[in-house]
Length: 168
Image: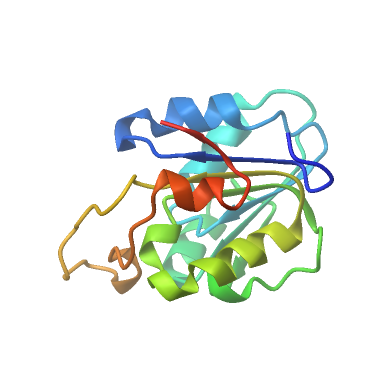
């Protein structure tokens, strides 16, 4: 546990293990505010609503891709939805107790990684959970959504140098 910034965890995990891992590692919401960075179709919002018992906190989803946000507005998994670039998160310092960034950082250019780390760390009070492939995982240059292209590779040492506990 890192103080005073709280705990930081990164999973270098296989895609099929993510749901179980993320739900195990995320703390109970119990009235806390959680940010789901690059929420996509909202799988984490839905899973947190159904699996993280206790008095539910507020879950905010942010994504750059407006069709995802429009889709999610129909179903209510999030208390608030924001269209924004993850490189410029529009939140004040320490706005959230918990931040989740699952399978996000590899979609950013390598040179943007440091900015992303600083951004998510500045808005989070207690607990950050990131997941990413360990190293390069090519999806090809063509993806139906340009934001889904993998643009960088990250390794255990990258996260440990930022004070994260790494699993996987």
